[in-house]
Length: 467
Ligand code: PFF
Image 1 (cartoon, helix red, strand yellow):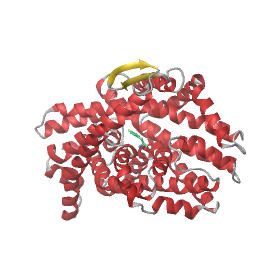
Image 2 (image 1 turned 180 degrees about the vertical axis):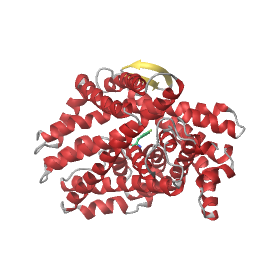
Image 3 (image 1 turned 60 degrees about the horizontal axis):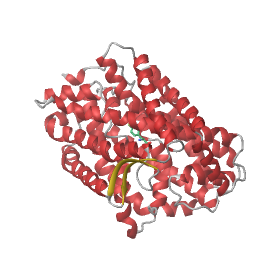
Image 4 (image 1 turned 90 degrees about the vertical axis):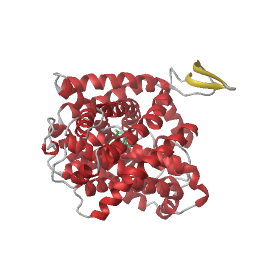
């Protein structure tokens, strides 16, 4: 039987390592940077509610689908889908969905590395005390100076890509498993230290109410954003979870494992919010700052509270570690595929792919400075231009990659994977692989995978394209 095979790339020592790896993938800039600022922008509690509903009803069924496809196929996402499609009598073309997802992962990595690189810059400058007593203008200026300097950005982007490539090149057990065993506990400890610290600011309850008080008026506003974010934060739709599933031990229960990952990811996002908002309130700043929350508001906050220099430096180390464990999961699916497909060694494949992502990432670097005026998909007074220099509307290169991945490729990948598990693999195969024990629980899970998740994705997909 297929599922008794072992992946040629290696296997996690236990299901705990899968939990570490999948949580490492899921917990990243999405949790620490994006979730708090989106919560701020969409008014707090109502957004958090929608986010939770989306994670549990749509995101987790997709994650379950990916994990079970990976574990049954035991190969890179493309080859797993191909093998399972043939096993179920379906077209091997299903593997194209995995190819698209894996390309999306590489595109995401190209800009993720640039943003993660900013955290490297902040670790250094926070550590040197550059933000001590800084004003909002000062912090805004420091961020603007950083993003306006292409070579400083290229330096950090290069360093971060090297860090990512280094772990992947060493392989599943010696590289990924070993580093995850160190980085994940570190991440949790740092997060708890920050949480403990935010409790001492005297603004903890204000932060708590902001996150959890429900304001129905804002519910609809944040709904689509919450759904889109649920995919991104769980790393689904790109094959990362699938390839990690391929390294999972045979006897581990997939259902409870995936649930654990979903709960951990959610807890980290909520804890990040609980740790950050009180600090922002303590410094008397605006929570609705948007993407600048982490790089502008937080340095002001840390620069003006007691022990801010140490706490701020720890915070950006936390961001770095979280981004690092996510970025390795973006590179792994394609590396695994090329190792299966070619005769090249893992190290060479990693070097080649990391170089390509690095190169594409230069476009994101330049989107903040040299190419700031280069706009794509410009709509000027009803006239559409594919490209225009210095237009008032339109997307930068980074905007295009972000839109393409998070609004188009990710939802499509999610849809394909969950439909594959729910409709193509067949109920019996899924039941066998999930081995849930409780028939009613399986029925509910399968219903979510078959109907609720695909419908939810279609709604997000359609609404986001037209929004
Ligand atoms: N889940 C990551 C985050 O929340 O930052 C982002 C991510 C990781 C997306 C891995 C896609 C991926 F393959």
